[in-house]
Length: 580
Image (cartoon, rainbow, N blue to C red; front, side, top):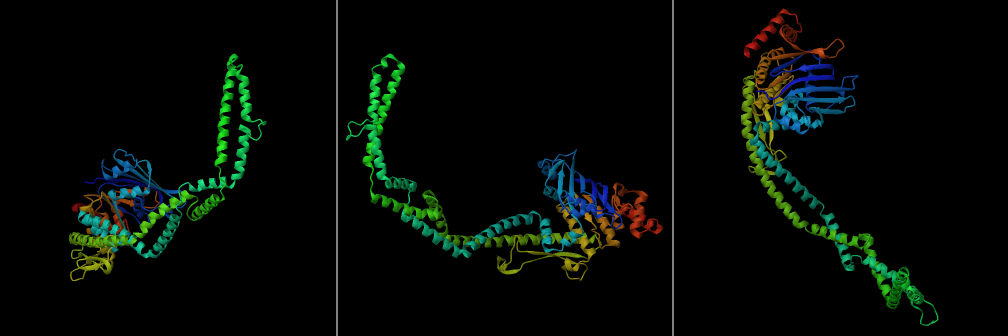
């Protein structure tokens, strides 16, 4: 049962397509047409809807932008729906609307369920909705890393669990090794840094600065430097307030204020306002006497001691030497000392840290080796099942004698990890190099598919791998772009038959040039250009009855009205229908 269905795509100003609608349905849909008619734009359009790379060269010449819109029926509660709703998208009666716009300048915008979303979100949804395979994917299968990924995907949890543990240990080992290398390779610089810190801390400790001491000494130095002037001023001020004993006839402020108070005391009873003023004058007299007393004490205590001044200036010079190197004031110097002491402790602990890191690195390498061994064993077990399943599929794709196998090997490396008594190279995915081998017929030695498979064989291996995945890790929709390249005759018929069987479990869309494949489709779409070389809305149409026979005849013989081709086309359709 198909859980999601790509129902329709509208394509505007993309490549040769001016404005066209591609109507799809559950089951097997074949997209055909003349070479250069724009069939591949169907694959390109779907790639854009699924977060593929935007390219300004895709925009039709003269257009401001290219737009692809898609309508996907998705069941409520599916992972794609949950993720879309988290992004604020809204469903339209169980349908998810997706659009992608690419400007002529190369800018790209994506919308999902009426909401603007990052393009990356479309790519996330693609993993749950559609598997796209073209000729570039076949070439990708030639890479060893892709072959290992295919095996791991097939193995499922049997590999995913140990691989997750391995990846975590590998990440920690990389971090430990990097820190250890940083400490050991920078040992000289760190020793020099420690010496500088140690010298600075010793210099500060010798002076023993106290917080706020620089401010206090500055004030004291200012006072001692002007002691005589301060004492003289205090004496004059005292005489002005309290009188001069050597001048009994002189008038001072205290005497004048006392006289004013006595004059008002005699009449204060007659007016409350005057009484209040009298009290205030009395307060002034008290304040004058207090200030005069403090001035007298200040003058007596003021010490114009040149030795003390010299000592203060010497202390200030010592503090200034520190602030010139370690901070703008004593508080900053003390803060530097606190930070430096912590850093020095860290640096002096390098030897101990090196020992700890070395021990942890060695333990992690042992652990990594054990996890790598477990991972290799899981891959080996999965490889046997995977190879057997793909070999069985190839038998139904006109390769009855072909055999697929995997070679799992490791490379010796003295700096690697120990696995089964050997020291081998390791990486983020383990110690294994996984290579897919093909023996196309009995007696032929297994060879890497990059060297031993023709174009047609590679296409069938790719299809067989995807069919095996469909049974273990299915997606709702498969789209193949000329997966039948390099294939003809009986092999083409078998590919069509196998795609039709796959379509019973999922939606399958195939861009093909082979009539043997198209004949097995539940629906056939024709892409054709107008006289001006563009594909318009009417240029993508569903073929039925006589129209479908004519298109298959063209694909067979290049002549729509050839009686021989028509007979062959009708025979293909009848055989495909009987096979269903």
